Length: 388
Length: 125
Image (cartoon, rainbow over all chains, first blue to last red; front, top):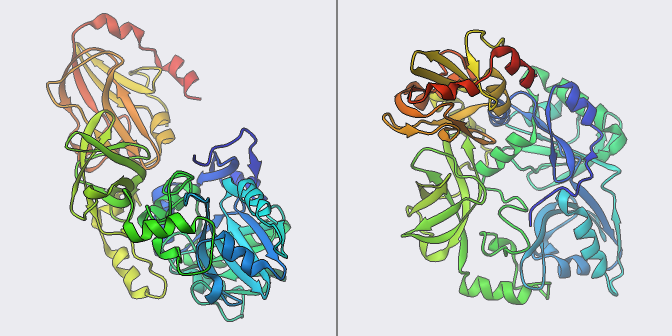
């Protein structure tokens, strides 16, 4: 159900660069990726307070174009593309007929009748086959350009300052993008990300990956930029309560169950999964995603079981130690009657029940455009200094 | 960091200081480095009876959870309370302030399974 490797380990164009930086490399979703360069906590804190650069070349990109592309994507995905104008990007989900999740993705409208779709690394083949299978009579062409496309993420409150050194173009607003030259290389720059911070994502031809990577790191040096591994990418997105495919969502979970109902536009024309998702939106679901923090010591990790009054009520979908809040926290899929904020959960950690309590999501509010708020993070809490 | 010569080691990357029938247990520099940043140490209760090669403590880093086994059976007589608020001591000073617990051992023969530093150095390369 998750993002397992099939034994073949693929490399991004930056694999050697990471190794030379001394990164601990791991197999993630079949890709040879940096888990950390120095330390998850340090990289996490750097992204929250300064800026971090992530190699995200493993993710997939498809170009969908043709006269039927709008209608085709409206049929395939749950969110409504009517408001998506050229230069904007939206979060979206592909579902099966039974409403469970095939993948979550971003759709960029490049021009009329042409879209770029950004998908999770482990789902590239599955998504491509699913889309092609449903092409039917739609006048649409689907091209997988993942191998030719590099993707880097620059995230953190100082991202804009750093990017300003590299381009004089007017920078996009959140969920918007521009196409411009970055060191003479045609690049899509979108103001999007997966950390809860202001930041940008860059898409450009794969052969330039090392060049752009180096340019951004050089430009950010005076601001304290660091390369960030997947370890901190995970702790950052958990604090922001962003779902990750294979954890919060998979082919046994619907978007409504995990609080992504706001994405599912049941008032739009027919789309795959609409019938059941509409029903779930109206009548609710038996399970629901909650976020929790530990009351007892310990870290509740993925798939740990959750109990209430000796009854198993669900499982942890993601859990970690939070470098920002110096607490252990996570997300969990549990039976709805137990899901109220403030409720106590008992999570089985190594055979013993540990207390946790349900809290309001997200742990970490998106900070883009509210720079005064990042100051607070810099000043709290004092105990953080010990591990910086 | 060099592994101290006056300590014994287990193949599970623990170091053991033997002082008569009292042993002090911690994890090696190699282990703390592999675990990365330690954020919680779950200590055994004082007075608890522990069994050789069974879990006595648990160490959580950001990315992983690891059991610390008792190198020999006996009673836990002291735990490093400082680790409750400063688990990073295990990273910073694994052979000193990062010690984890002390056991009054019941069967000294069990210590024969421990290995000397030369042998441990080969494992921890």
